[in-house]
Length: 253
Ligand SMILES: [Fe+2]
Image (tube, rainbow, N blue to C red; front, side, top):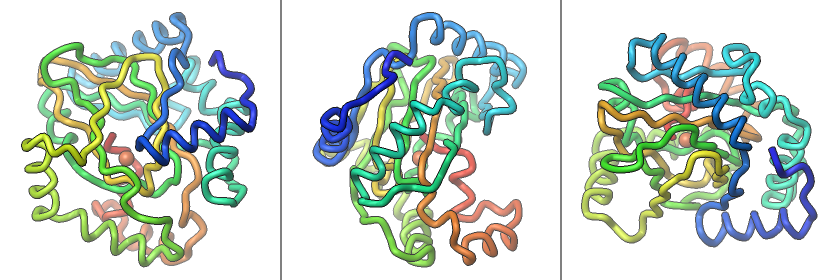
C-alpha cells in the first residue's frame, strides 16, 4: 500500500468526494507486485472452484497473500476509522476489517450479480483484482447516499426488506437497462481502491460474461448495528436462511 499516512485534509477530501460523487478513488493502491500476487491467488481460487463463482470470506483463506496483510494493516484500518469518524462524528470501536475475495465467473457469477442492496457497514472499499476489459465488465452501479444511518437495527432491517423483493429488484434492473442517469456507474481499474458509503448507498455489480472473470477484494468497516441484540438474535434464529441481513456475510459488489 503506497499510502501509509494521510493528512486530515486528505481524509476530508476523500469524505467530500464520497458525499458529492458517491465514491472516491485511491489510484494504484496495490503495487504491481501485490496485484500480480493477488491475480495468482484468484487464478488458483477460481480453478479450485471449477471455474465458477467463488467467494473467500475472512483472512484465514488468504494467508500468505497481500490480502491477508491489508486486512491486518494498522494504516488501512486507521484510515477507515478516520474516514468513518469524519463522516459520522463517531469514533468506531471496530478494530478489524471484514473482508472477502469475490470472484465472479461462469453461471454462478451471473446469479450473484444485479442484486441491489444496502450493506451493514458504513464504509465499503473495493480493490478490483481482475476486470474484463470489454463486453460485460461487471461495473459497480449505485444510487449513492439514499438513506441516512438508521438509529435502530429494526429500522435498518425495514430498509433492507423493502429492497430485497422481486418488485423493487425488477424496477432497479429496468433502471439499469434504461441507462438511468441517476445511477452512478463506475468502471473500475485493477489496483485502484474505490470507497463509498455502502450502508447508505443502494448498490450492486452488473453481470459479467460467463467466460470472463471479475475478481474484487472487498473490505468493510464499521458495522453500524453490530452490537444490536435484535440483530444477533435474528442471525441465530435465521441460521442458514438467506435473511436480508445475512446477505452481508458475502458482499454483493
Ligand atoms: Fe455491498
